[in-house]
Image (cartoon, rainbow over all chains, first blue to last red):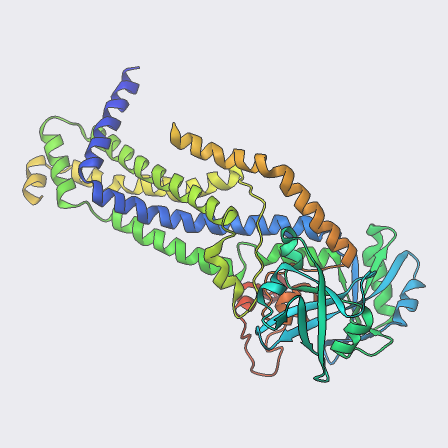
Length: 378
Length: 87
């Protein structure tokens, strides 16, 4: 009990001492919070995107068969589907018709696609939330297209995808097969690639091997490959994340180093006076420990809650420019909010603990010096 | 006390929105199944970043010899680990 009471008095003293230098300490908390905000935003964002991609793309086709010519993706003859259907274990093979459309007016790339069933007319389309927002050449609900042979085409928007599905449909334009072939110039009898479903998922690799043997110029992309790509994309070692982490990490090191290399004249003077009135070195170290603990805990709390709001309420708006790059269209999406105890504990161990301990070094150096010398230096 | 409450909110809020989030994910996954989609609409700036998994094998100088990757999002994709292991 005596120990607890002693710590309570020390915390009281520390808080009033911090308040005496409030502007300096408030700016310290602000900088420290920003560093933690940045680190936590990156952690929250990458984890949420990885989880979201894993959940959504679990329904992607089990295999995509592409034809490659000169090392590049090329149109695939639809007759290849018959060869694949003959392989034992293959459930269904569907030619997929999809491509890109670059709109000169909005300077943005869109994905155009033919769904398996399209219950609308040939001149009608279904679009994602980003299409109408960015298109530019809109006349009422009609959009101008320029076909591959420069012929102008006017298509009517009859429906749009729910905003909530923006992460997969934002730049999507669905249309009928004849119109797709007219705009993209894909000849009859050819498709962009083939989507394959297998009867037993455990046989995927064996079937992929058989497809490559039967059609050597093809490349098989399995669902596992798709999921691995997205897991690696926002892995902590990926290019973007490592750049962000290095920046924030270096900022934190400089900041902590500054705290470790010395105390201000006022702080030294305070320690000298405390020693002079009878405080022991242990009391001063305990006081400095609480000082570091209070500052870093407040900064941790502000940084982490700020990052949570930034990632899950404003869709990581600060990352938008980096993710958007040169793109004219960026989807408005919301990520599933989730915070993991392990993540918070790692952040705490990487930021709060080093800072709290590092502030003890200069305090200890000053506390073991003769109080008279300290006060004269101060 | 208020700080503990703030931290607790970080764990309570996901639980409150879980139902609607699960429904959204179910809708998106259903669309992915129906349309046979393979990628997230994150980087629309280039064909090989819009459909990352469908791009040509991600080789350096893929556009022409000496052509560095000129789209910023290309910098986010790390090279396959096998390249690093190969010595």
